[in-house]
Every structure is written in structure tokens, then in C-alpha cells.
Length: 217
View 1 (cartoon, rainbow, N blue to C red):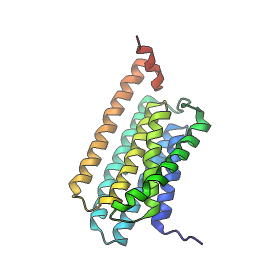
View 2 (view 1 turned 45 degrees about the vertical axis):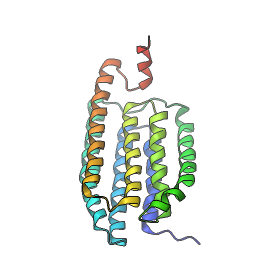
View 3 (view 1 turned 60 degrees about the horizontal axis):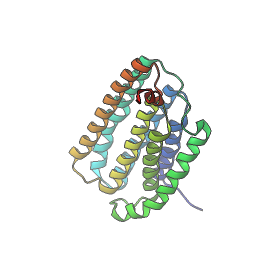
View 4 (view 1 turned 60 degrees about the vertical axis):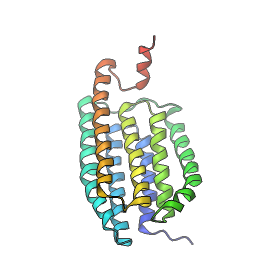
């Protein structure tokens, strides 16, 4: 019988919450699920810090809490309230099929790549590595398959969460300035995408990116 430790359970919950953020039609509720996922990520950092006596990861957890659990969701929820958009547009391949495509290809990619990443990782944690790649890939599929701009911003956040967990497992001894730099870039990206979303909505009256096809020609 396989016994899962706390980090593995939290990592599996990250996959579940990623899929929920990806597929949840109510945009505000999807944003709150993203907050839960980011809390899971921060908790993984804290648990790994204790498990491996890695104080660097505790610093990552503290910095991540303020920037990713508080600041990024604040920006997202403020944007959602300002635009007053509740339900997202139907994604490519529909609401039912697109999550199946995303999770199937993301897990397949993770199972293929994680043995390679494990070779170069400081922390040889199988399930967290699989989860990090899966979350990363679900973010990629979110950018491809979801039509709503706010859901695409959330997909970027998933992508960033996955890469953040991968970095923590592979190179947590990197200088803290690297972590701060990555998070700062991500926050600026969210701010810029939010400004673009507001301007897009003002011009098209919708957050459906396919409306931009009207600009062709």
C-alpha cells in the first residue's frame, strides 16, 4: 500500500485546484480557488523547509505569501469587480472537453519529463515534481484553450505557480533575489495584462479574445 506524505498530498491538491481554476465557469469563484492553490504552494515550501532544514524555502514561503496569496488575488478580484463579468465564454472545444484535454496532456507530459528533472533536482520528490509540471502545463493549456482574458491571466498564474514549485525543488539554494525577481516579474505581468483586459473590454464590450479577429483586414 502506497503511503503519501504531507508534501505529496498538498502537491496532488495543487493539481486538483489547477484543474478547478481551469474549468470553473464562475470567474470570481475561480479566482478564490486560485488563492487556495497558492496557499497550498506556500505550505509546500514551509513543509519542505522543515523537512530538509532549508531556511531558504521558508523565506520563499514568506515572500510568496505576501506577493502571491495577497497581492495577485487582490489585483484579479479588483479587475473582476470592475468589469463585473461573472461567467466566462465557452472555451475552445467546449466546457466539458477542454478540461479533459488539459489534464490528459498535462499528466502525460509530466510523466515523460519528471525523471529528467529529477536527475537535476536538489530535492528528489517524485509527486511534487510531477505536480509542478502538470500545473505548469495546465497553465499553458489555459492560455491556449480559454477564450476569456481573465481566465487567461489565471492560466498565466497557474503556469507561474508550476514553474515556482519546479524551481523550488530543483534549485531552492538560489539567492533570494532570484525568487523576488521572478515573483516581481509575474506581478508586473499580471498588472499589465489586467490593464490590457480593461482596455479590451472597453473597446469590444467583451473579454472574449476571439473578438479581436474583427481587427483582421
